[in-house]
Length: 265
Image (cartoon, rainbow, N blue to C red; front, side, top):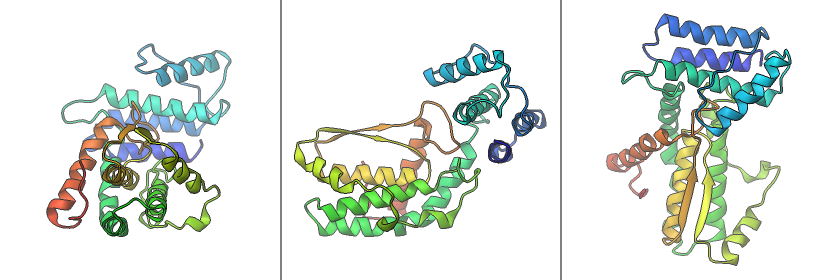
């Protein structure tokens, strides 16, 4: 809480284009309050979602008990910090100012991912072309590629995009590996609907959409529910407005000839 969270707040403010000095100061005051273990900010009654209500109610009780930022549970503190960041940014949102405080960081993450994505996904596309039937080898390669996209998590890197961190995909370093069980389950009964829970914008979202496209290629009658966050949180977590720019970027890859074998639908 003393370093990573204030760093995220400051880098978020720095990333926002045309942010006025008075609004940048609001970000800085929140960062410094958290760094110095200041008092918890008063909660208002304008909560929008269930999680917002949950965290604000818990923080209200913590304030009554005299707790500070460093004395409440880490999970509560970090989530409430994102609630406050959203409130700051939404209060200044306009046609020229995004309501998502992480909008520009997400743009940068997508741009960085697009530099490596065609090369990373090429073996998967080749495997699909060579295998008319869905094989366990293709399934495991697909899951590994999807799994290692999670390394590009801006909340863990303090908002910094680590390009060298997004290219590892070895299955030998997994602490828990249930791919055999997942494959067996996939073939044990007809699956008409599955849910995929989104995490990060950028490489991971690109890999998620690739996973969905390949599953639909082999199972055209399958329905896939893609679950995203209702509000911006943890810097790079996917929200509904993040989907369209990523789909457009994938379409542009195909149009530009960089990845003609990848067709999203």
